[in-house]
Amino acid sequence: MTSQALIGRSRVVIAGLVVDALTEDAVVRHVVAAVGRGQGGHVVTPNIDICRACARDPEVRAIVAGADLAVPDGMPLVWASRLLGTPVPARVTGADLIWSLSEAAAANGLSIYLLGGPPGIPCKAAEALSARYPGLRVAGGAAPPYGFEKSAEGLAAVRQALLDADPDVVFVGLGFPKQDRLIGLLRAELPGAWFVGCGGAISFAAGVVRRAPLWMRRAGLEWLYRLSAEPGRLARRYLVDDLPFALRLLAICLVKRLLRRWLGS
Image (cartoon, rainbow, N blue to C red; front, side, top):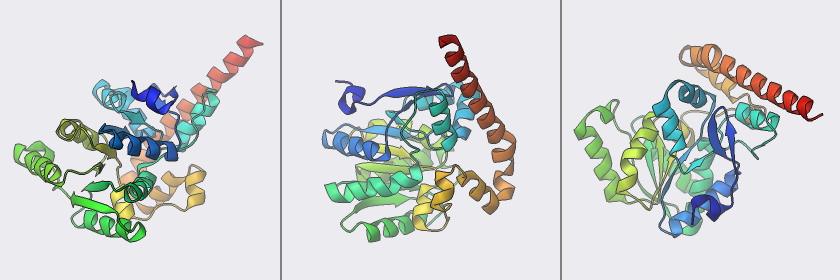
């Protein structure tokens, strides 16, 4: 039985990527059920920056295509799906999944592992998650040094720590595509675990980086909040690279919708 049949999901194409039309709750229910069957997997959350990377690099695009679940992190992708007439139900972010999946893990006796972030941050995130969800089993955490993935010793240390912990759900917050390449290497070692590429979610959960207010997230303005907090690091990425790509994507989707209406009239 295929994964698609198991969860009865529909899949849509946005910006050349196939994504799952699932709510956050549906993602959580699927992961918990799959872990119960001993079936692991990989969740990727494409946003505009990831879509842009996939458009440039076939190897990166293959990483997203190879994930078991791909859900849109970014309101422009949600808007694009609506313009195309194949709407996804909601934005689903790694920063939200780290909380909702941890809550479900606590309720179902599953363990989590936190991989990524600056030194000490996985521990702080574990404390915050455990405080909110009593009974949550944190199997471990690690903040690998910069460049660890370039050496056999660095990769071996991360791999062994993860194998020793033997978690059910692993949040990997190393940034795309680094985190997802690492997931590709580790999945075979823990075939029953689910890996979630979650970007900065571990730092968010630890409370060392603040997220945008809820109204800004719902309005698709979280990027603006982050830009105001870190203009030096994010200005080029958001304003020069991502914003034009997002506007082109929405324009193309609008033209496709208008053409369908015109041709169908």
